[in-house]
Length: 384
Ligand code: PMP
Ligand code: GLN
Image 1 (cartoon, rainbow, N blue to C red):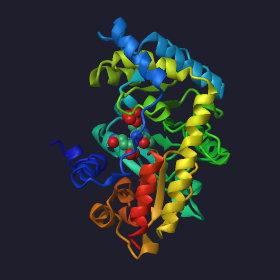
Image 2: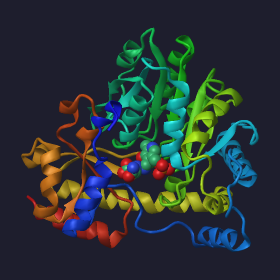
Image 3: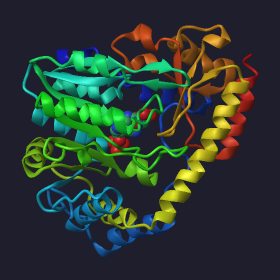
Image 4: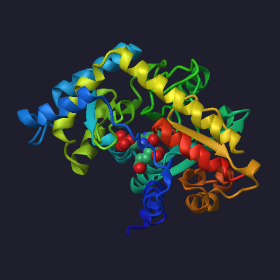
């Protein structure tokens, strides 16, 4: 194994999902819904397959219908205008978008300032690109994790090439505020940095929080690569359809890397996702309301089971503190949890360079059927 990858081993999601299968535990680890996305969108995929749309290599940048739908979605929701031909790229999930963006934009030795805890593929992709990650730690402040803007500013050096942002934030459930995003934008403009922003949970915001795309802030449209995913917005994580929107030069750069990773993303699903992006607002509202009810159920249950519970305002994850249970090592806790309680969760420490900062935190996914969450809560309450 190449040295830049050796430190990463097997992703925690594969490890923990395998543990769930082996032990028969309820899997609240890896973030995937246990209910598929809309029937009409599944039908659209079947129709594309039957009609022979996308069964052979689709165009490299993505099928025109999907690129147009991505641009229309950004315009409708955020007032951001992208040219479907030059400013939109379809990828094999957000995961490929992240990889292609980092491989395309980094030179060996470039520093990437990323919010810590960070989604695990960021670290691996920065390493594969020969970059250096510089984590800025989100820390508990009351019932949520917050970004220290002074620390963020101090992390930028003459070698910083780009800021890697994620909002709504996995695993903390934090949604960056307008003031925080404005400060990030000002910093990027002042220091002339590129920004890659992972906004795959854009539709999952609660409690009146608003998802604000970084690309909409002053000076950001030209320097920002925005990433979205049909896995997260439509509950089709197995379809692996994601996308990038950015200025033409950045899209061309990302495409240069993407063409040698997968060449193209899977064809028939692209046609179906084009229809999904055009669903009326009522779909997104119902999706959000459903996830909100699940969040409330799991958050209340975890609190009753004795966990410290941070407030999730975005994503489908809840981060907990296990210290009130008399525990301090999230890794050990998660490895033992299937045996002890028949539930699988993710130790947040894997998302940190400063492992000790993340040690007592454990993430639970609530994108599961109500009965599954109720049973998980019943089991977790027996822990105390
Ligand atoms: N970014 C974040 C923050 C995620 O949580 C995930 C995965 N769930 C991804 C990217 C990857 O998305 P995809 O499944 O579309 O590759
Ligand atoms: N993004 C999902 C999570 O955070 C998992 C995706 C994966 O397995 N790579 O749980």
